[in-house]
Length: 171
Image (tube, rainbow, N blue to C red; front, top):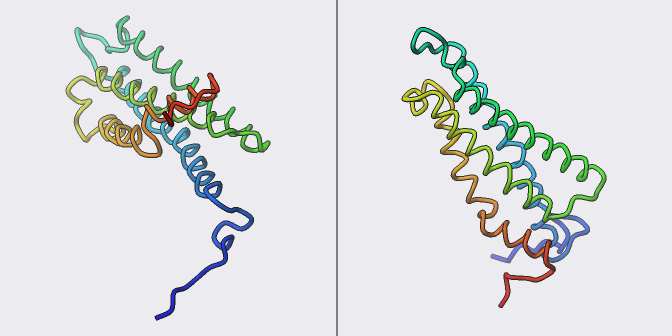
């Protein structure tokens, strides 16, 4: 049987070398920037709803200072992540999004989304690990997202190179 051969630019027209596959990777990572915030939002909303309805000591737990502080911090990080994703999207639309900016977004938004899920789990108490609420499912999914499409360390090195101009990937 003869080998099937495609022209070099048949899969990604006009692209040669690793630029094509790496640009696809950058787009996938950009999707993660948004997806992480979706998981964070679902967990945050579950925590807010639970805090309004779960009563302890004769009143909703959402009326306690520590719960409100946790919710406020979660809201700040969630909305900062969404604003970052919007900003990166605008840069992408303008054709000015650089790979290190996508690394910045993925690193930040996945980290913050995991922390939002962890905090939501504490608000839900024992219910935070049950399948009745989405928090634990999102937390475990985000743990895998933390690794695929580039580990934390890989994105730190990408950012480090962008900040210093020095490549730590090669000795």
